[in-house]
Image 1 (tube, rainbow, N blue to C red):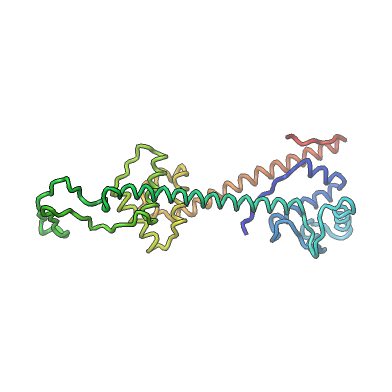
Image 2 (image 1 turned 60 degrees about the vertical axis):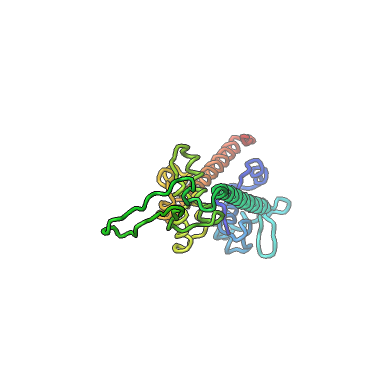
Amino acid sequence: MNRAPAFQFYPDKYLAGTEHLSDAAERAYMRIMCWMWLHSETQYSMPNNDEFWNLVTKKNGKKLQKVRQEIMRDGFQLFKVEGDFIVSNGLRKEALKQQDHREKRRSAANARWKQKESKCNASASDLHMQDDDPLQCSPSVSPSPPVSVSPTVKDKPIDSPAGESCQTSQKRFDPQGPEIMLSRYLAELMRKNNPDVKITDSQLLTKWPKQVDLMLRVDKRKKEDIGALIEWSQQDMFWQSNILSMAKVRKHFDKLILNSRESASSSSQSKLHRDLENINAGVDEAYAARERGETWKPKL
């Protein structure tokens, strides 16, 4: 399952719910909450037996019995017993809320991709409205005289007799296929980063689609993954100046995957550290207020 590294912490509710606990019981309660979130399958439950209570709270014997009684005291019970497990209703709500948030973000991302895919379809269709073959010579241009090629050149001679259009030997791609749509997508993001970037029709309709075709057929990449890495590379300060063609996307594909994962992990770790610092600061302030005989109120 996709496991979020942190959960929302509400100091006012925490202090109100743990006011009756001793310091040892309060620390044990917080350790159980953290263990549930990080290690249980549901993120909000723990087996209700002595082995797990001892493992998580690091208490045993009479000390374990005392903190367990405080936490599960009638009228102040902090965990609900469901079968062989104890359950935190607060963590259950948080886990379901975060799962719903992830699903909404995933749906929104899919919708954005479909919208961009539709725009690419429209852009590619516009290029083909005047002529079915965008690489075909315009009939208004006078044909060039025959071009003789030296016998030392390996390429075959190219002739363009009168009344005959010159045809490219490059493979033609479906304007609504992923090859051209992904090429259009890369061009669109590059132009957002640099409106003066030079991108030719030959790149959009032949060279870049060819690289996408190789990624799909030879490298066995998925078009969704290619699109996602194109988007990420053009948002990253380092890669947006290095990924300026589809050939570069193909060349650095595996590096882009690793870097994008490291970036996501770094962002999650930073948020986790900030949350833990806020929790520790709140708990320290609460303990200090208790020692002074004052009622601590969280800063909103």
